[in-house]
Amino acid sequence: MTDNIIKVGMADLKHRCHPSVLVTLGLGSCVGIALYDYKVKIIGLAHIMLPWSFQAKNNTNEAKFADTGIKLLLKNMLTDGANIGRISAKLAGGAQMFTFSGASDMMRIGQRNVEATKQVLQSLHIPVISEDTGGNHGRTIELYSDDGRLMIKTIGFGVKYI
Image 1 (cartoon, rainbow, N blue to C red):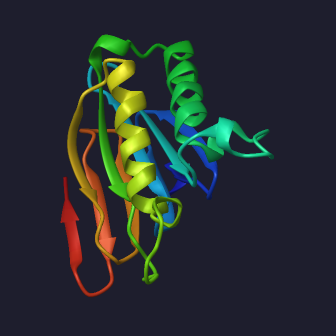
Image 2: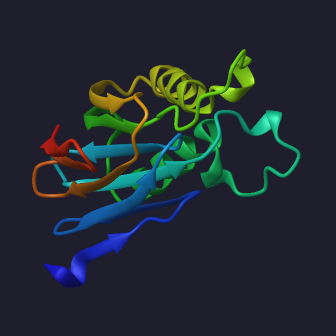
């Protein structure tokens, strides 16, 4: 199985067929969006950094943003045989890693990433069945193709599955 462990970097996305594990490290304010088609066992993982591509001057990397990254990941999964009616989502990340006094909404990147992710998934009729978001701690996640479980490792909080 170690040959089928694929790393997903920051502002990156990947999808794979069974048997595979997709891994992303260092989710702070970023959000990991895990998509799973239970019938054909296709998994997809996006590591988004920002909520909306139209708010950025440099928006050429679609995987960097919730609005474009989720749609690109979904398109790639559908091309390989997934069905949108069978896809569900799990989310992790979106932490507030630093405290700012009198911070504006613009500084709450983690919260804005989670909100944008949920809006995009809702518009695509993809249910979010589980999440581990918010807080002030980073996460590493692993998405398994056999059953769609998402392992979340957090320093000081241990390991859990959603």
